[in-house]
Length: 318
Image (cartoon, rainbow, N blue to C red; front, top):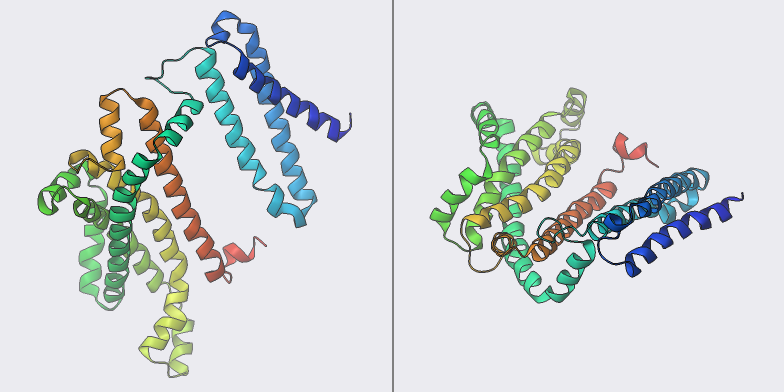
C-alpha cells in the first residue's frame, strides 16, 4: 500500500475514535467493551504515524523545522485522546479525574479569575523572587571564587539548605514577610539562591590554566579576564541553574501559598477548589502553571542557543 494511502487510513482510525467520543453516551466502554478494539487500533495508528514523522525528519533535513514540532504535538494529542476516551468511556467521576474537554471548558470560562491568580503568583512572586535569588547567587559565587572562606562555608550550607523541604520554609517566611506575595518571593529566593551559587561557582572555577596564562600574557585586567574568559566558560553552568530555577520558582510559589495568602493566587485557588471538590478548576489552574513553567524554560533555552553556539553540545546539533 502506498505510504500516502496508509497514512490516510491511520488518520481515519483516529477520526473514528473522535466521532465515537462525540456521539456515544457516557460509559460506552462499560456497556460495550468491543469499542476498546478501536482504542487499541488508535494506539497502533499513533505509533505508526510517529514513526513515519521521525523517518520524514531524517529523510528531509531541510524541512525538520516544520516536521519536528508535529511529533510532540501528535504525542500530546494521543495522550489527551486516550484520557478523554477512558474518562468518558468508563464514566469516571469528575472528582477523581475530569475529562480534558471539561478542563478546557473551565479554563475558557474562568479566564479572568485565572489571570488574576497568574498575576499574583507568577508576575509578582515568581519573577521577583527568581530575579533576586539568581542574581544574588551569581554575585556571591563571584566573591566565593576569590575567597576560600566563603567557598568552604557556603558550599556545605547549600547542600544543607537543599535538603530542607519547602513546607518547612514557607510558614516561616509567611510569619516574617506577611501573607502577600513578598513572603512567596522570599521562599523562591531561598530555593533559587543555592542552585545558582553552586553552578556559578563551578563554572567560574572551570577556567583552564591555559586560558589564565593566555590572559596574563595579554596583560588583561581582572575585568577583562572575567568577561572574556571566566564568564563565557561559566555560561553553560549558569544556564543550567537558570533553567532549573525556572521550575523550582513556580513550584515554591504555589506551595508557599498553601500556608497563607490573600484570596488570590494559583496555590490558593488549588487548595480552595480541592476543598470544594471542584476538580475542573484545580486542573485548569495546573494547566496554567504548566504552560507558564514551560514557556519560562523554553524562553531560556532559546536564549541559551545563540549565546552558547560555540559550545560542543550545540555545535554537534547542527
